[in-house]
Image (cartoon, rainbow, N blue to C red; front, side, top):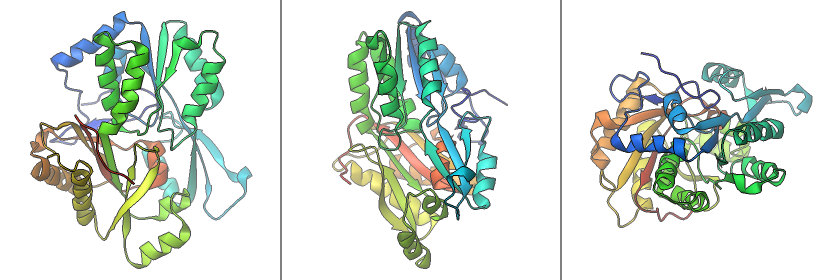
Length: 346
């Protein structure tokens, strides 16, 4: 069965828990409330660091703009050799990205071109009273700063709001769902934005990678550090922290299975004094950056054992292309949203 996802946000999205085919977003009574956004005349804008199913976007007036990226041979410093692309689901696909990375192409990522962002906001304000933008983490990109430039040029700056996000991938989807509920419960747009910014502190994300080659090529890990890791056959475990919205290396491991165990232990440690289970975790996802069916099932089994979730209830999301530019094929992770902020300090 084939389903559509919002253009520019991703070519695929949630993977079904059992058969690993693309699944529909399961509508609940709470989801029906999201349709009240129709009466609020507010548009939500995201970028390609998050993937949201198209049907959900249509119901809740969610639109997207593409981030941008460029690539060149990893062994060249000639800026003229770089080829620029938009992460719009058309100019670059996962398969093409992985193929180029195999050819030792080095990728750099960047904000949405200012002209594209400006035009999109202006177009939306012709139809909606307000636009609320959820960009990629401000610690990973200049996207947030670009949005402030757009805002400054508007005749009525009160019509455009940007959430100062500190994460990406499904965390933004989790926060958007809460944002919509707050708006529907009568919270003002300004206050709902402030709440959303704080709510990222209840989202926790960890990534593992297959090897460090792409992290080095993208500049996320230095060559000296990579040599040490390669000699010892180690790979890093990464997180994006609420304090600064940046990527941090928090642990190292020797194998996929050991890294999954470490990721779960990191999550448990982040919520010291709180038992993570179905009562305290409101959303949970496995992040798939090109891993095998066996690896997906292994992560699902470990999550089920650790947190008590039924295996069939644990969904899998594809890692967005803009993130895979840095992690490379074979990345994997776990992302949770809880009902309390985590206590980790990096």
